[in-house]
Amino acid sequence: MKTQLRTNTCGELTKDDIGKSVTLSGWLQSRRDHGGIIFVDLRDRYGLTQVVFDPKHNKDVHKIAEGVRREFVLQVTGRVRARGKGLENPKLKTGQIEIISDDLNILNKSEVPPLEIEDRVESGEDVRLKYRYLDLRRPIMQERLMLRHNVKMATHEFFNKNSFIELETPLLVRATPEGARDYVVPSRVSPGKFYALPQSPQLYKQISMVAGFDRYYQIAHCLRDEDLRADRQPEHTQIDLEMSFVEREDILTHVEDLFRFVFKKVLNVNLEEFQRLSYKESMDKYGNDKPDLRFGMELINVTDLVKKCDFQVFQKSEMVKCINPGKIFTRKEIDELTEFTGELGAKGLAWMRVTEQGLEGTPVKFFSESLQKELIEKTGAKKDSMLFFIADTEKNTNEIMGKLRNELGKRLELYKPTDFKFCWILDFPLFEWSEDNQGWSPAHHIFSSPKKECLEFLEKDPGKVEADLFDVVLNGVELGSGSIRINQPEIQERVMKVIGLSKEEANMKFGFLLNAFRYGAPPHGGMGLGLDRFVALMCGLTDIREVIAYPKNKNAECPMDGSPSDISDEQLKDLHVKVDVVKKK
Image 1 (cartoon, one colour):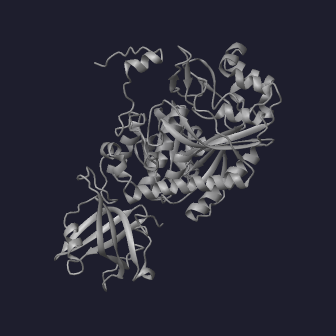
Image 2: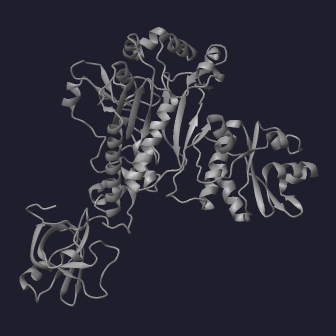
């Protein structure tokens, strides 16, 4: 990578370059003074090269080197030579050579950095985000963002090979209800009116299908004003696709092919077959709709069986499920798991130990001998193992047991972070009942198509309606959701009626899409895939901030640039906006 300031990068010289005169530029990683000879590790994003300043070789250059410090920006010219015998570093590509310096130019100085620019030293989150430009100099962060770059390049390559066209949808759009709060932008030229920043390109990509672009994709920025967590940021990046004249299987096949292509191209990993589960099957076996399939330990529904015992807690609960981790736990470990489930809202964690004599534990006395045998048979429990039980409502039991299963998988080290197990969750319910509103609401979005065989239940029993909805899940993390869309106006009206949305309201919120559908909308469907989550899992991580260059903290703030920030009265006046904020006590 030759320029006027360097002939090579700090990560490319090897023993094949011995004897060459080279110029390197980069940051001073570390400096060591060994009996008057100064050794410096020079770093750029390509790697490290050791540079030697020897007063016997060049006294003037050595004198300058005495004054350099960490993170100074240096330009070094010298000759490549072999390191001394036994001094090679096999962990570095450049570990067999060093540069004996003939010239040294200090391109810029640096104050003492507020954090260590090293992978082995991890600073606190606030410091890392405030000085993100320093945190990003760390090799591990540069590796992660390079992997992200490679994923995006492979994604473009895949779609381009498969006749997709990249269309850019607008960032200033009409506010439409999509599940989270919108970020809004006041209009200067239309006083009192606002744009919304897109939560997703959903409506525009469907309009693109009406426009005749039968294979659309975009690596899109999406913005949602919602509470944050490790896998959620105010702005995230989505691999978005939509296809016309397709059925569910066409979309699933293309998405599987995309992931196979990217994993092979970026990590040289061949993915196993994508397992397929119905929503009902996933909830039953794993307690959630995003199961981690790197390990087994399925949940066992014992509701009907334990109703026969005299244990009141089990008798009065809507659902009782148990899990069989296949080992004995200490009293301390049981207490820890009880506390863990208690924090999730469990009223208690019942347990039984399997011994040669049978079952032991508090609930056992309420079970007859025949019922104990029936329970052992149903759970497949062996000697020197334990059963854990949660009894509650169906919703709470599944939620708590699903998280307990994941916790046990982690504690027992049943998988490696670099294992990759994909699955599809299919046949979601189209509607979910809202206790707050005492009515039906869409489980995904109102443009998802009900399955043909479920159309008869739309008005008379909406809870029975399954949709052509599908989620792709990797290692217990939902990577994306998709569906076959409704393209027939009469079905769309029926779905809107179920959720209590009148024609007038629908036209007010989605009129521009519904109008487009009047002019021959083809059968179509698509997905949005979370790029940040995808890349994080490829790195063996779950916190997406580690693969985003400039993320926000848990308060949706950027400590580096101070956003969100106040704006001037003049700007507010131009935007016709008055600020009236109730100050916190």
